[in-house]
Image 1 (tube, one colour):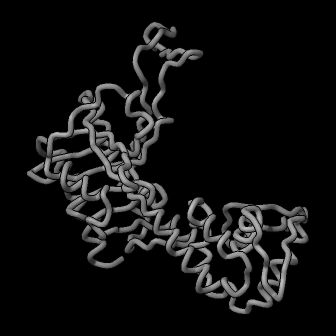
Image 2 (image 1 turned 135 degrees about the vertical axis):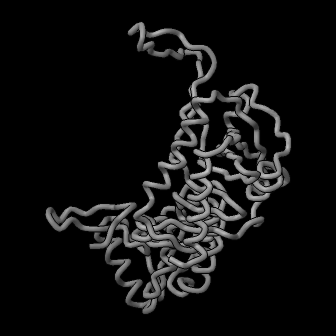
Image 3 (image 1 turned 45 degrees about the vertical axis):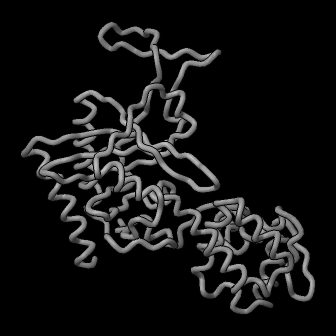
Length: 323
């Protein structure tokens, strides 16, 4: 843990301690995403809320920090192995690099008037995240969480909303919309730095996932271009499929991948035949003719076809932990 990263965490904890000693202002915002001329931008809309909800949000701010006490804190890296995802928190300092970060600074930190949420149904399909802004002693901190329309429940033609009254022990009809707010924050923004608590969700919030495409594309051109025929098919899949782009970006961490092209091709063809998804070859190159071929290749490069040590059964996995 570097001293600068340790200081980020200490400053956030010190801010949290002051909330119990003085009056503070808490505001909750929904962040919606828009797109214009191919560029994404973000708009904050204030949610009027009860004091009890604000108090709960502040309480969970302290809880989320306490739960992370056993974590290491390190500089943010786009590509991390699975072990690091379990053991780390991260500090992200590349401020002003995205429109989302600019919105945080230019609107929420400066306190510009944002307007209020009037009708959840009108913004439901554009919901991106929520932000809780806490101001104390003339300083502000922002708690961030990825959010989606699935967390808003509304009445439809075939469904009605009901609530259970614990005092009366009976159900009743509800009007309006119901929200599911998760206070397990994904990141904390303070003094132009992010403390990242959930790396995957944080990357979705800042739309950093697009950077995986760049890493994957470079990997194709520089590392595996010599072992495949049909590079254009794979490159097109990377452009349209975030999951594929992320898998290839992670594969790029493995410096042994494709070190010996002839052996690598031979092993992948052998495995593909064994699992019944045989790929064709020509002149020691794997032929990628279509999307299905490309997806099989990515799974092979990711070493995602495994055999159970107990039963000998073969599986396609999407997550694994080395033992």
